[in-house]
Amino acid sequence: MRTVLFTGATGSIGGAAARQCLAGGDQLICVARDPAKAQSLAKAGAEIHIADLADPKALRALTESLASDPPDAAVLAAGTYFLRERRVVRYEGAETEKEIHLAVNAVAPLRLAEALARSGVARIVFVSSIAARWVRCRGTDVASLGKTKRYAMTKRALEAGMQELARRYPATVFVRVHPGVSATGLFTQPGSAFPRFLLPAMRCLFPSPAHAARGIALALTADETVRAVHPRFFIGGKPVPCRCVDSSDALPLVSDVLGPAPET
Image 1 (tube, one colour):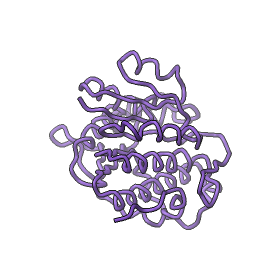
Image 2: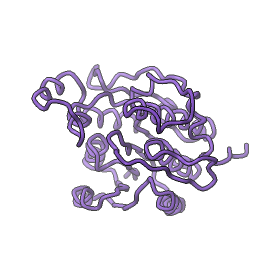
Image 3: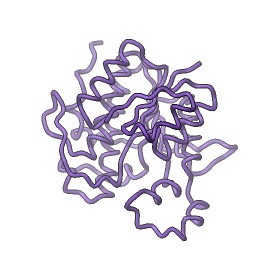
């Protein structure tokens, strides 16, 4: 039986993927910020670890607890788009404070992924966004960007950091998933101004969280390092892989939160 660490399992895409893994017989360790939202996962047999990944102390405690008994694989699906909170997060050893969206979407999963790779975890699947392809990093002031561009930039920083970790830890397979626009997730989030009467049409045009979960399930068995799986179009019941892009221009946003490269 495979043990899989999950972040974002109380969200739409992460939740669908977590339920699919539980149904397939995997043992899940789910990291959740809200105990109430994690109740259904606990009833389904998942082990729940309550932690706010935007809190550096909670993140460090989580990585330390996993070091002695690491999972077989990890799915890092936690992220935020509609977060209205405006604050910065200070990480130990970081040169600069991190804007909260950057902390949640990039820094926390990168620090967790680095700790897991250092512990010998064989596979790390991380959920990015197709929007990461549309931006280029021309500075480090993420807070001044608009909501959509800020989300895209922080996801691009996530990809850049994961590409660097894949280079440092070749024994760990890093797999990127681009879930595409989820009609039953993004458009129904609190704060979304999307007209509800158009949702049925959007569900026909765009993948649902269940489709994205299938992409994550594929990523848990994919062979290529930093492979991008985009479950937008399906051939033979499987998502079609999409081309990887070089995101190294965004690495300065997160390079100071990565630990020193391991000695070779």
